[in-house]
Every structure is written in structure tokens, then in C-alpha cells.
Amino acid sequence: MTTFRLTRRAALVAGTAGLAMPGIARAQAEPVRIGVIMSASGGLAAFVPPIRAGIALAFDEINAAGGVLGGRRLQMVEADDQTNPQVGVTVMTRLVQADNVAAIIGPMASGITIAAANAVSIPAGVPIVSPSATAPAVSDLNDNDTVFRTAVPDGLQGRVLARLVREAGIERVAIMAVNNDYGRGLSGGFTAAFQARGGTVTAAQNFEENRPSYRAELQTLAGRGNPQALMLVAYPASGGNTILRNSAENAMFPRYIGTDGMRDQSVVDQVGARALEGMFGTGPGSAASPERRAAYVAAYRRANPNLDPGGGFVAQGYDAAYVIGLAIEAGRSAERAAIRQNLRAVANAPGEVVGPGEFARAKQLLAAGTKVNYEGASGPVEFNAAGDSEGRVEHWRVQDGRIVSVAQLAE
Image 1 (spheres, rainbow, N blue to C red):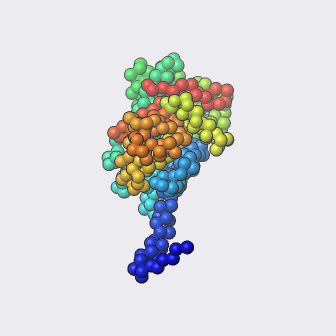
Image 2: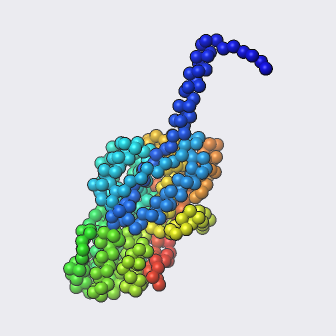
Image 3: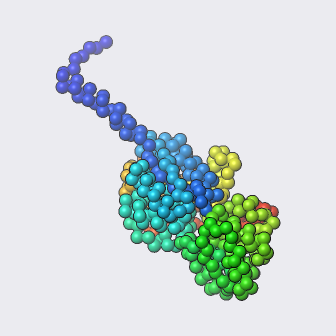
């Protein structure tokens, strides 16, 4: 065995390095905190379990592939905005200031997204990716390129729904829409497109949430212009189910039309399959290739056998988590500004296409200096200048007591 002696200076240097290394290792191993704001209570609560599971699946896949930045795990830091804009501002403030999250997935509702972004995330420069905020007003935020969404904006949904309603032979429609950015925006977009196709909105009513009954409003709408259907823009637990139940109990409308906010099996289960048979509408769709969609569905069902991978905004939540993870890896940084700057770089063409479950392969490509283009469970994400994603709108209907998908439409 060879013996050697250290000088005092060398010993001090070695000792200092030995003390520092555990600290460096701890810093490198610290998780990257990602805020997740869901509406776990309130009007959108029925949507949350499968969406949260989709986000968690993406995090689990990313972490199983070695995480980001040489071994740092992504950690979900969750908050419930109670489907309330004021609460949304409060919980986002906590995530940004106290929890120091690098990015945020959510909020879910458009009005909450707008309020919390204006008050908190935009001034702080924190990137947010909402899987379900669809109101056109989100595109108009002066956000310094911090607000993104994997959900398709309502302008497209309104045009697609107007076409489907006319193709169903319906010429006259009454509208009830929740009195917020989502309800007013989608109702307005549908009305313009429907009238352009020769349809007539016989009457429209913006309603306030969480009232015990809406019979008076429904009677007024049903009595004007002989409507052939009621179009409902709402959330199930804060008014939507009550409106449908009130109408069905009094046989006020022969048909019902829904939008993404009501595309949930719990609506049919709670209001009644017989009353809603034949109801149809639109919601978030998928433009994913069959292979990528199948990979996502199989992984989701293994992890969550009792939840629906095709539920409203579930794939969009999964994709939001993936693009954030890829942006961190591509920018070699979990700093907020770096994530913002790299979201389009990993989501938009050109680049080597990577899909659901392929985070390890994406890391290898990025390490080799190859640009990646994520095409996810909901399809190509492709953020435009406003941070909106291209995508598809689903045509769905209630058939034999179940919500079934009819088609995925681009226009």
C-alpha cells in the first residue's frame, strides 16, 4: 500500500470540499415544485379526480425516467380554488410566494385563471398552463407570455357546436349560460356562429350559480319563440344539474345541448338517463395519433382502473405536466423564466416527435442537442403567439345512459 501525506493547506481544501459535497448533492436532489390548482370543491369538483390522476401519471412517468436536471424529481404542490376566483387568487399567492413553485398547472375555470393570473402569476413571471380554461378572454391577457393552455379555446367550440346543432335539424335554441367569462364567452361565440348558419336564439339568460331552483328562468325561456332545445353552458354542481333537473321534471324542453362544462358522466347519473337520452354537445377533443393515444390510455388505465382517461380535460392535464417537464429539461433550468422560454421550443414543430411515456427518450435527444416536438395524449400541442394550443373539439352524446364520443372535429 502506498502511503502519502497531505500538506495543511491541502488537508483544509479536502476537508472543505468534503463538507460542501453533501450540500451540493442535496441541492441537486431537491425536487422541482410544480403547483397544481384544481377545483376540488365547488361547481367543477366532479371533473377533478380523473384530471388530477392524469397529471399525477405524467409526473410519475417523468420521475420514473430519472426526473429532470440530472435526477431532480417533479413534486406536485396542490391547492383547491373551490371554483371561486377570490380563493384562486389566494391559493396562487401561496404557491408562488410561500411554496416558490417553478410553474403552475391550472387553474381550471377561465374566470379563476384570468383573476389569479392578473393578480399573481403575471406580475411574478410564473408560467401557468391551464388544461381547461377555454374562454376567449384568456387569449387577450397582457401576460408577458406567461399564460398557456393545452385546452382548445371556446371560439372553435362555439363554431363546431353551431354546425352540429344545425345539422341536427334544430333551428331555434334557448340558452342558459353561467354568468362568468366562460359562460358569456362561449354563449356569445355560439350565438354568432349559429345565427350565421340561419339559426335563431329565441332567448338567452345568464344565471348566477348555486341557487336552489331555476324554474322561473326556465319557464321564461321556454315560453319565448318556441325553442326546439335548451343549450346549457354551466358546471354540474353549481347549477347545471339543478337546471336540467328542473327542466326535465316540468317537461320544459324536448332536447338538451351541452358544452364542455357539462360533459361528465355524473350529470347523467344524477339527473337521470331517461331525461337526458339524446342530449349532445361538444367538449375537449383529441387529435392524437392512434399509437400515442393508445400508449396514454393503457398507462392511465394501469394506474387508475376506475377512472376515465377520455374524460373532459384529462388528456390536456397530462399534456400540461409533460410540456412543463420537457421545458425544464430543454432549458437545463427550473427557473421560471427558462421554463417560459422553452415551452414552445418543446411543444411546437419542427423537432423529433416524442409522445406520451417517452420522457426518457426525450431526455436523450435533448442531451444530444436535438430539438424535440411533443405530440401528446390530446394531440399536437403547438402553442401559438397567445399561448393557445391547437386541437380538436369532441362531438359527444348521451346514449343508453352513457356519454359516448361521436367524432373529433377541427371546425
